[in-house]
Amino acid sequence: MSPQIMILHRPAGIRPFCWAAMWLLSLGCGKTAVLPSSPIVAMVDDDGINLKEFKTAFMDIEIKDALDENSDSVKELKRNLLNQLIEQHLFLAEAVRLKLDIGPDELNQAVDRIKGDYASGEFEAMLQKQQVTFEEWKERLRRELLSQKVINQAVPENIPITEGDIQTHYKQHSKEFARPNEIRARQIVVANEETAKAIRLQLMQGADFASLAKARSLSPDKEQGGDLGFFTKGEMPEEFDIVFTLGVGKISPIVKTAYGYHVFKVEEVHPAKPMTPAEAAERIRAQLTQERRERLFATWVAGLKGKARITVNNQILYQPIGRLDSSPEPGHE
Image (cartoon, rainbow, N blue to C red):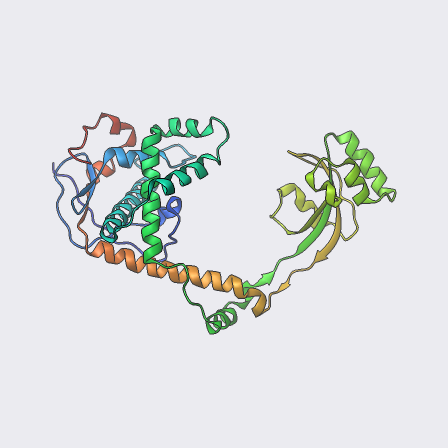
């Protein structure tokens, strides 16, 4: 039986520029061709995406629930993942055309930056979990960096946004721009509940909160008298939200968190209020810039796809991932 061939078209409204977040895309192309029965998942012009590449990308996805590979959601995930790989192949071909590359120093700096985010042994554990060698991982990183370089050249970051654009957007969406309720609070953090109870009793009897924080708190903000500055609900750990139930000058009950036992005091409250156009300007500018970049990106990618021959082998695409190990090796990479 000959494999099924599927050509899809991609909807608008994507949010590009972050490779890990490109799951909402679907496939699209211009010219079409027929794939032979083979372990090639897709062809991008003369460039094949084989099972090993597809499986490696699929295994990178964090899936919390049990995997039912016959479900519509998993099939959609596979389609979207394949589209990410297809687009990367298009970007890399464009890099060749534009004579762009990632030099050894640039690549090594990125490697060091990423490895620095891992604790001792965690990076090696990540490679083992993904079943890739360091050199394979480094090559994938090079391809992603090069793809991003192509995107940045095709879709500039600095897109002019006029004051008129900002004013028009503010008038049309003024209800969206409100300064949230902010609270400035202090905290004292200690290691056990008994100490917290004793400190809270002192505070209720009139002791100075800042002085006690400097003398007794375990938190780094002790040097500022436990001052946390202004923050909104949800900015801090969930347990801190108790301060939004208190009035100015009030002392909280003892709150237990992963850091220890806390006592809070509310110093100031800034009630929620509408933002002025001037206050909202930078937020609007960033939003409009992102929206326009997305439109430019979508148009650019559609142009690349329109000039390419993209074919998808559904028989291979929807094969259960668990069976891929037994598949024959592709004839070409």
